[in-house]
Length: 117
Image 1 (cartoon, rainbow, N blue to C red):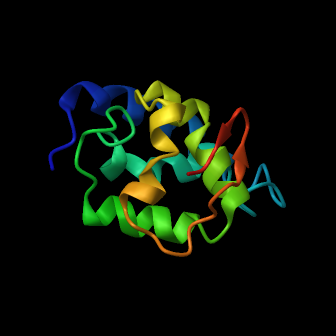
Image 2: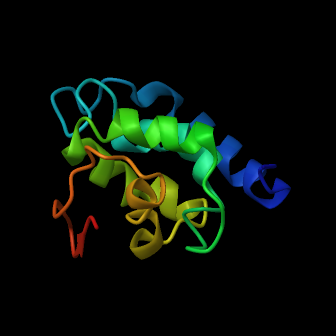
């Protein structure tokens, strides 16, 4: 699935702005990396995070599965400003682990005002 060009410029801009922030949130939700930085890994999930009927790519599912090993980080990434700036809708993004059929996903985990299905 191709990443829409309209999202490239904001993501590049955010990447430049966040380039020096690695480790600022040391010990935070995502360990040494910030949720904003980790959100860039979800680029393959862009369409799936905007539209619940959009297909979810294998690459997206692999990334979600890895992030889901730390549910606190997964939630922080899905609710991050970076994800929202890229057009992700939190109420749709939290459905991705289920849509990927990840058996050991953190079902029932609270992500802010949302609960992972």
